[in-house]
Length: 207
Image (cartoon, rainbow, N blue to C red; front, side, top):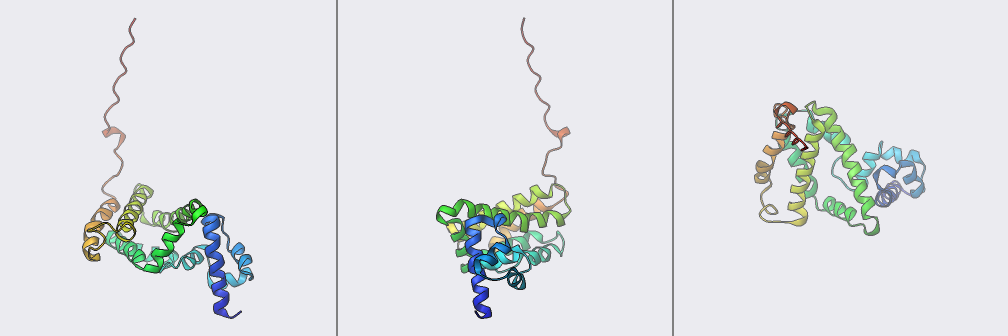
């Protein structure tokens, strides 16, 4: 097989494995066996399972490099950067179709969804949590991811108007401030115990 044929065979095997077994249970060695090549061949093209997943699912970026690039400029403007990155990802028709196909994989849909959950958790959430350096970082990132997935789904999959046809710049102006607010370390997300209403005393028992 030529170089392109080998690469395509590995990607086909990887795509099938991620659909069938999910992200965590799929290994690069297992993909190599399914593709009929040595593990070293897979490592020659992709140096991590994340990179292989991104290629197999035709993501327009590798999270290993994309997340640091989003975080590097600092917290200022990160709400806009995260919003644009999310919209840009699903604005690509091929990437969007692959995501939809992953969640509509028939009998393997549950495993596929778990695979996507694991990928998002390990590749995006964990990386952002480690680098943000703000209180309640995981809660903040989970809120942001949930919100952005909802906006992107509304725009590109459910296609509810006016969000579906709104110019991207206008949508970013509406969404980014909410993201930025969640990133603000001066705005706590949890109410301190001292500020919570005191529990009502239990009524005295009669008798």
